[in-house]
View 1 (cartoon, rainbow, N blue to C red):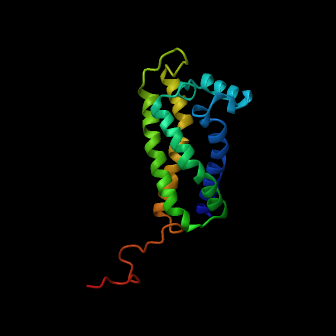
View 2: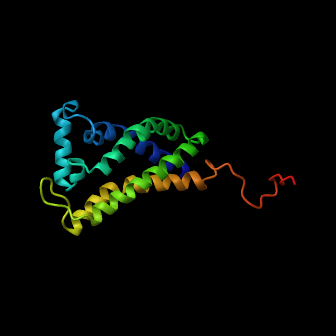
View 3: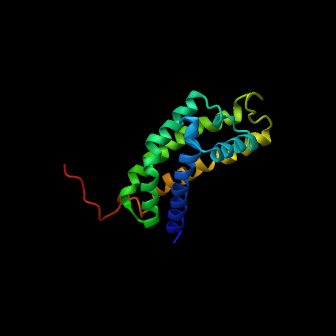
Length: 176
């Protein structure tokens, strides 16, 4: 029962990530005319409300992460959403581990940047106070925490880890 709840969390995470990537994140890479004004306004509102200048004027390193999101992660999202909606799909284990390690690797510098970078007030105000920084961290944190939960699920859940445990008497002995 617990694994099914986790699978549904992962399903919603991946299914919701598709429109977020297409409608919000890729605005940093694609030409302005690709997006309707409503989506551009939504991005500006988010950036102003949560003091996230990286989405309006992304540093090159941030753009490189978004490019990876577009080319590597986006094709994986519907595959993962399907696997976790169906449940018990062991074939998703290796791709999920690769996804988790990739995302965790990108989120660490993003969170460090949010917490430590001395953001200017212009042209787009970044977080200035600890409260503003931690608010922005709380928005990015689920994109680290859910993949870490998924990684531990893939590594330690018997549903997804088919490796026999050490000391298992039914395991075949090695030939010499």
